[in-house]
Image (cartoon, rainbow over all chains, first blue to last red; front, side, top):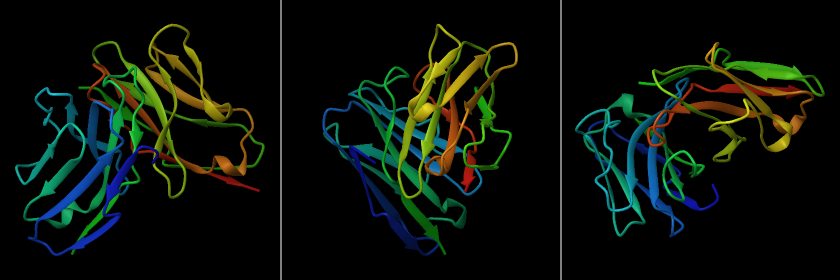
Length: 115
Length: 112
């Protein structure tokens, strides 16, 4: 997606291993979101970063999930001790100012497969 | 919390036929409604949004949607579809602008 680069595009890992997913947005976007898209499900909100405010972590499904955003730009989503139910496409999205007035620009996602 | 239901997981139509993709939402407060589209092998992009004002909103590529508060619906329509409209369409709702909830998606397949 324009303005958001996610890596890797595909990741296959064994159950129990840790994985780190990266989101690299074009600078200048203050709001950054992580979503998860599972087969047949909608986009599940995970976490939201807005400027220097404390992130909204209310969507993280368990304490195995964590995310950080360094320098207000690059963000990493870390999943510890992966489980098979973690298999999904993880999407990063950015907006200009946060909130509904600014449309979300999505990356192409990271497809995670836990075997 | 708000939620979204997309009633059809798949919608096959022939080229130049009209199409309606259904979306119903639930929320206890005022809502803001969106449709996003994901073309094959591409990221999601905003199709249109309803924030306030006119209940009929127009988006890109000839799509439009109508907000119906009494029926809690925000159905997406296009009078004549093209092959290039084949994609996955997601309805989304937000009541505070930060926590955007998405539906499960509707896969529109346009056949020649």
